[in-house]
Image 1 (cartoon, rainbow, N blue to C red):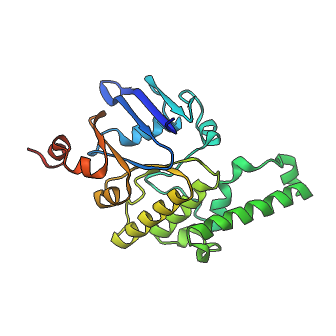
Image 2 (image 1 turned 135 degrees about the horizontal axis):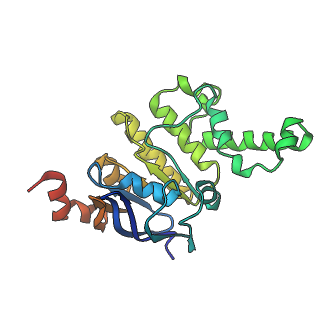
Image 3 (image 1 turned 90 degrees about the horizontal axis):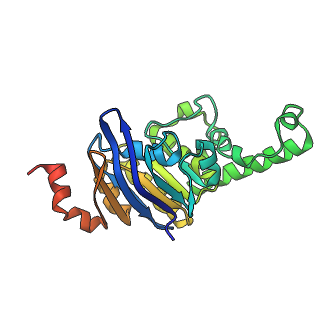
Length: 251
């Protein structure tokens, strides 16, 4: 069974068909990329999967369970985590604290226990802090643990964002243009981290414009154009697909 299955998904904005009958599957343990020109519907597709936008029709199933119509926090709790094209950090908080925020779905002590700083709350906070540090360690960025997010370089912020997305132990991680704004060295580091995340048994679905990164790390690629699914296959198959070549390069 596919971990994620998208079937005949539609989203219209007035007369614009942002996502027009898109279908594909993501197999467990793989890295799958969604590519296409600007305006192809890639980020809209992500927003539909994560519940940030309602679909007009179609189905999305995660681990065999329909998730369309669920709230974003419910989808996150079910096991889908995501990052955004524009990094969303708490600039005045340290890298460690930003990752700790991602563990909120694991918190059970409750509001009053936290307000009164009861022993149960203190124990839970210690566990959360320890787990957050382990995630920084996994991504080899413990040296930034006590540095405010606003003081980190863009690529370092991206790594912290990855760690925060992993905090909820998601089986599926959605990455929206993880290499956006990065230089060639930072992009190579992000590619390495994505592969390291996959090695932890986490399935990755990413939207990306950097074709070198996509071709290097993807097991499969889906190509969208004007909201429609036009091709799907291995990196080698996509590289030699004439319709894809025409879309990117013209006749």
